[in-house]
Length: 196
Image (cartoon, rainbow, N blue to C red; front, side, top):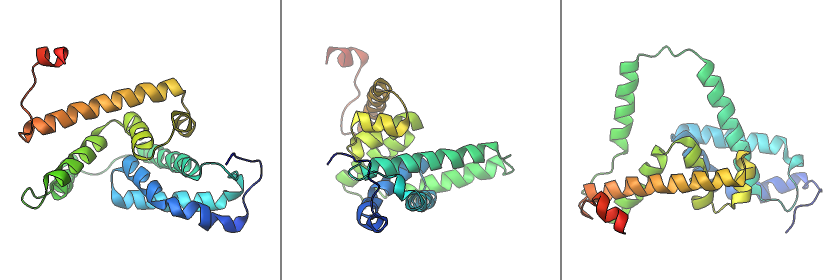
């Protein structure tokens, strides 16, 4: 369906926007890296989407529209937080971060290899710098086209392509390191890497 200049009926919001809430949540998690913040972001996104529903165009990609709103709201809150003066103790922050990381580590005896790999991929994705992570999440996890991602992020398609290439390269390196650490593959020398 091609987009029209026609705004959707007000009662279409639930039918059109709500079925993709899981996708918006995954995208929000990729931005915030914390479930509680992601839930707040999703709620804020849907409140804004409801308020501006008449700006959505029938036939447009509702996921892309919601991702754009989520991204704008996330950066607006982040910029506001950066302007605030931090008063917390850095040592306490480090301890809190370490306890969260420790709590997130899966029990090796309880995890199957497949689950462990899924966790390794998730950790590698979360470790990416934001500019690479958001492109990888939108293209690889949410199947958005380069053109759509360029529109969501407000960057040229070439930038999307280069960021995605770099993101995939960083993910490959992180997963190679994980596989070596897990003993799934042996270490590769630079000579072997160049020959392959």
